[in-house]
Length: 72
Image 1 (tube, helix red, strand yellow):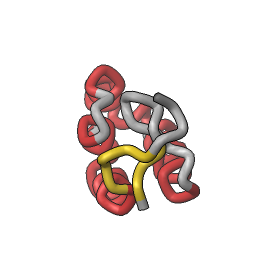
Image 2: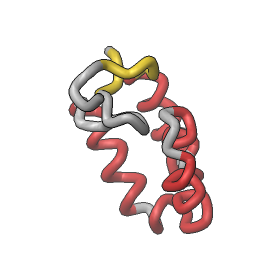
Image 3: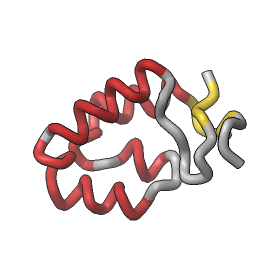
Image 4: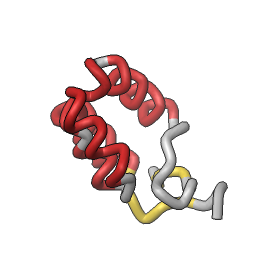
């Protein structure tokens, strides 16, 4: 249900995104395997998608597979 807190950590997702985001590892971590595979195949959406995800995670706007915001 959207709006609730996820079991996934905001900090872990941010670190994974910064270090391995071009491979989509942070998306696998939050349960978004489909888009994780797309990022893996496109190099993080040619770097653009990767950068957008870093910003979304940093400002707290990134959600898990169920639409829940990541826990602090």
